[in-house]
Image (cartoon, rainbow, N blue to C red; front, side, top):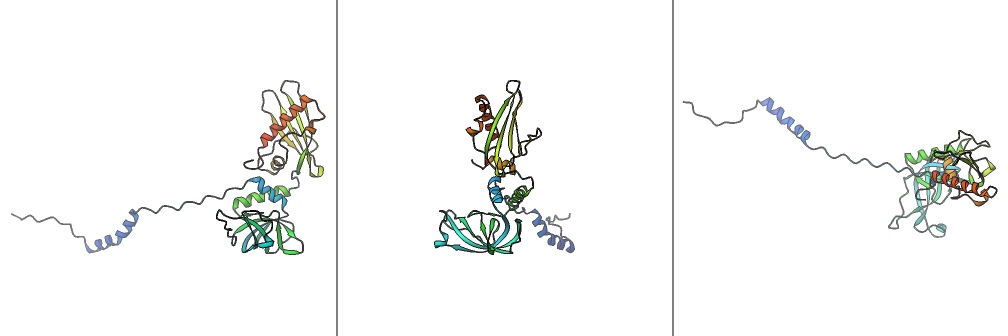
Length: 291
């Protein structure tokens, strides 16, 4: 009778064993969990339209530049700096001139006031890419003056795109005029109850024509529009938000219709004109976030 022998693993041929040993690290690596992917950085927030439009429309020069040096200004030269801010003189390399009619040097300098952090420390400006809103300094080609003490923004694709869009609107031949107030208003009732039209004539720089029109029909939502010519066009529409025309209106019109604007019309018509003006102001919305 043949004796039973204990079971043991079958021996692998040498070449097969060598291949298995060579593959073992690779197989282990394939089975190991993959490292977590790094979080995608959040895109920079798109700045609000009106504050950027303030800067662009006030600036003969809009410059894309990278700061190469910074020097903090103290003492008498820092007089007038607001609490919680510090003044610096910076020099920067110009990448491009976004708005301006004359060439500027490739390196320029300016004074800027920047906010301190919660610990009272100034930010690091060197190597920062910025958009600068400035005017030239007479007789000093390598110097510019910011239109406000802090008129520089950190560069981002969204900020540059918005600045370029506003600059294009402002430079257009048909750019809307700067609105300075309300001249007069009148209301014409229609033949049906609830029907009528209100026209509100605006004051502008240079005396260019501008008027609001509010049309009401029974059973329909009121419709308002703005005209920039002497003729009120039936095809005129309300301006889209975050456009230069919207900005000219939303940021300049008074909150309520001034009394002198309706002094020449009947009280009932004046009441309707005030209601229609309030409708336009509500449709425009606040000029600035949080207003």
